[in-house]
Amino acid sequence: MSSGYSNYCMAKKAPLTDATLELVARRFAVLAEPMRLRLVQALFEGERSVNELVAITGGTQANISRHLQTLAHSGMLSRRKAGLQVFYSVSDPTLIKLCELVCGSIENHAQRQVKAFGR
Amino acid sequence: MSSGYSNYCMAKKAPLTDATLELVARRFAVLAEPMRLRLVQALFEGERSVNELVAITGGTQANISRHLQTLAHSGMLSRRKAGLQVFYSVSDPTLIKLCELVCGSIENHAQRQVKAFGR
DNA sequence: ACTTTATATGCGCATATACTCATATACTTG
DNA sequence: CAAGTATATGAGTATATGCGCATATAAAGT
Image (tube, rainbow over all chains, first blue to last red; front, side, top):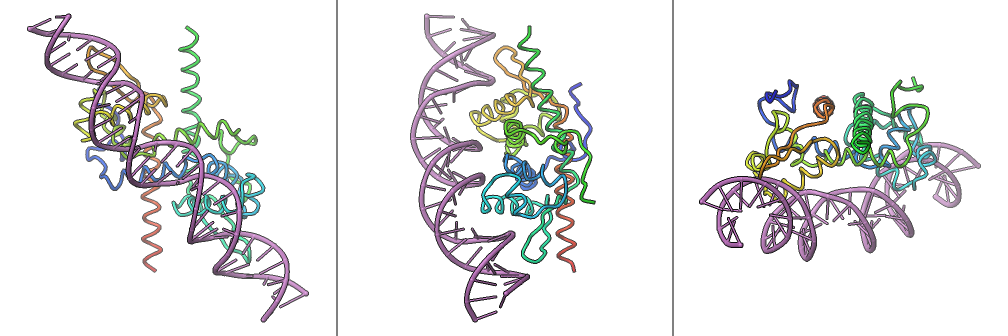
C-alpha cells in the first residue's frame, strides 16, 4: 500500500529538479487568479478579441491585457493579430482537463466536508 | 471551429460564479509553490511524518509544517496523528493526474519553443 | 512533576503581484 | 499627415504570502 502510485513524471524514481518544480509551480500560478480563469472560461467557447474579453469579464482594458499576456506567455493561449485587433484563443489542449479535474476535486472536497459535518 | 469544446464544468453553458472561480483559483494557488510540490512529490511514494518530510526536502520544520497545513486544509492531504508524530498522505486522487498534465504541458510548450527557435 | 521530542503558530520582514491611472505604440482611415 | 481606435506598458500603490526566528502546545518517558 505504501509503495504508492505509478505515474509518468511526478512520481517517477528520479525526483524533479528544482528548476522543473519552479516551472510547474509557475504554471499553476498562472491559473491561480480568478480573472484569468474567467478569461480562459470565455475562450473555451472560441477565439475572442481583447475588447470582447473586456466586455465579457467587466475588467479594465489594461488589466485584461496584462492577464492575456501572462496566459499567452505561459503557452496556454495563442495570439493572432488582425489589423487593430488582437485575438486570443486557447492553445493548450490540456487546459480544459486541468480545470475539469480541479472542479471535480473541489466538489469532492465539499461533499466530504458536508458528510463530516453530518455525523 | 469556433463553437469550441465539449466539457463538464468549465465550458458548460452556465459560466462559473465568482465564488466558484475563487475556489478554483485558490486550489491552483496551493500547487503554485515549489516547496509544496516537493512535498506532494515525496508523498506520492507514501505516507510520511513531518520530520521525515523536513529531512527529505531540506526545509525548516516551521516552514514545512505550514505548507502541510495549507495542503491539508485544501483537502489534498490527510492528517493522521500517532503519538508525537503526525503523518501526512495524499488524499486527493486527482493530484497525480493534475501534475502529470502540467508536466506534459510544459514539455509541449518547451518543444514548441525549440521548434520556433530552429527556423 | 520535569524533561525531551514532535509539531504548530504568532510575529516581522522581504518580495511578488494584481490593480489603477496615465501614456505609449501600432494600425486604420479621412 | 492628422485623427481615431485597439492594445500594450511604465509607475505607483495595496495586498498577499513565503520565510526565519522564537515560542507555544502536545504527547511520551524518566
